[in-house]
Length: 68
Image (cartoon, rainbow, N blue to C red; front, top):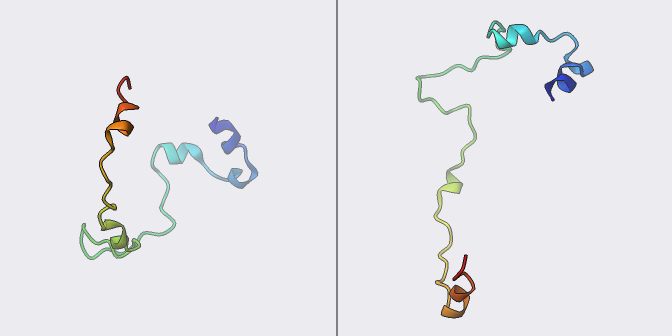
């Protein structure tokens, strides 16, 4: 569980209690123009294209799913 992570040498100086209490300062805080500023995120507009059209199943193919 989390014990393995907490005991890993990379986290030896890490204060998990402060993390749980939300008392840790962020190492970097991005500058925002407004609450909706997404300039710090990658552009994923290319993912917005619709999926390719699929053909309807034939009656034979559909029959395979009768009891499903």
